[in-house]
Image 1 (cartoon, each protein chain N blue to C red):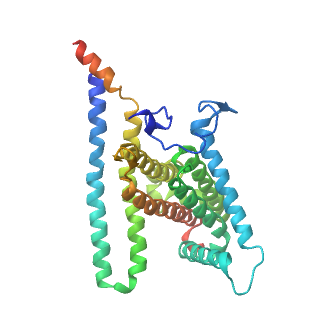
Image 2: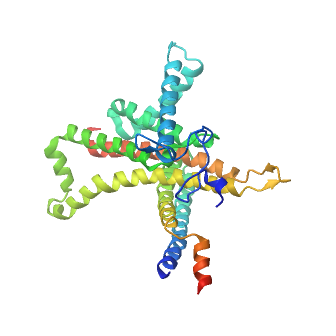
Image 3: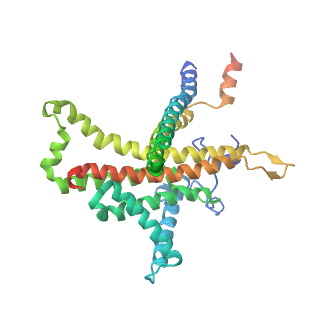
Length: 254
Length: 88
């Protein structure tokens, strides 16, 4: 791997350059103990996406009309699709969780897709971002599970259904609730995105030059695959988040 | 040296994760195709279930990819290995 394909990463994993690399700042500078290369770029990109989503929603819903046109019509399609999706999992509680699950889906979707624009960087290729998102889902799951069922019923649910099997099921449930689910949720999103972007970076580094000048985009098939998988991963994350919350509340109350 | 050789073989063996992943995805897609052929009116629902399942199966291969990237960082550079081999 040559220095050009690296974009300055130390771990040996090739990364595409971002527009932060054009700024006259040393890549190894530390601000508040966060290194420029690995922590600050994802944070800046996340902030950019949050601002974009917020401003976009505000502009689109500034003067609401009875018969929607333009951006409002587009957003209504999106929100309606998300509403149907959340309703299919959470039933009559869907109105309460639509803002959480919907914004989670849109945020992750934009974060996954923004890496395809040259100069930008997907924050989800950093494990910190996906771990933070997973912690949100984890806290929401535990909070609503405790709130809807009360501590006693929550504990009973942990013990499993045939009560004489409780000594075996209780540790397994604990492991599943507190370790396996958050870990698999975060590593799934992080691994998919990091794998895709690393493959892209490697193929861009290998791309041959036509007449020594014009690069041939041999990474193009992977771009299409990436866009499909990025959407799919955002959908799976949102689906699993709603599924875990539904499981914590209990099927009878939905 | 034996340690690094074992590590390199381990990294290479991680590629076998895609073997099982491919078999699993093939079974999933074949099941979905059969179901759609029987009941074409359920196309949308079956497609969503298939894609979610494919995403789950795909994650298993991705775990091994992440692991291989982590382990690859532990491997020495080619020049260093060649230097040691040349010295012997």
